[in-house]
Image 1: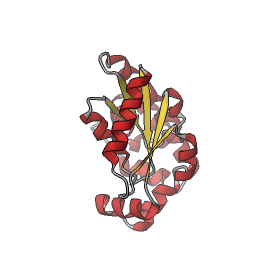
Image 2: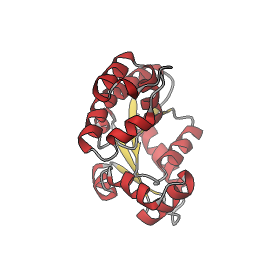
Image 3: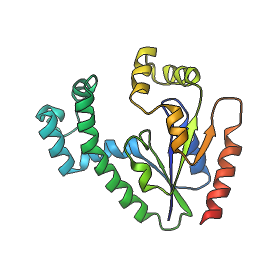
Image 4: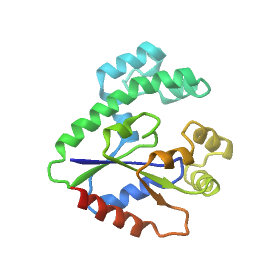
Length: 196
């Protein structure tokens, strides 16, 4: 089955693009949602997180203590890399399992903010990068999430640059309010169907 990775830096609109593919009846695997799920359900992963970040990484009821994890990794690249090295393989396994369940789809999409950073693009046949100018992305995230500009800049700095991702991607969708997104998605959909 053809697997397409979709990514984009914070505020680029990768989720919006993925939702358009869903309207076209293409199944989408949202890596961030899957990460939250496996961190709550995968017993091997939970044990590894507790071992690396302390028992306080989870509340007594078994839910993840996001504030604790965030406080540990926020300004510590080494600890963040450690967390990612534990979580990403579990998400990869979840993606493989999910793909195995998508019997009737012509192709599937994996939406992941860290598609290139996590090397999960290697699990995909093609990759799509959603782009938008930095200032527009900043405005979108500040409005959507109520974050400060500094917080958005900090999150953006943890990702590869947009330019680097464009070089790594097979396809680019421009979501900059100068070009309509839906026709770009329809054209990619047509191309992906022709590859099957």
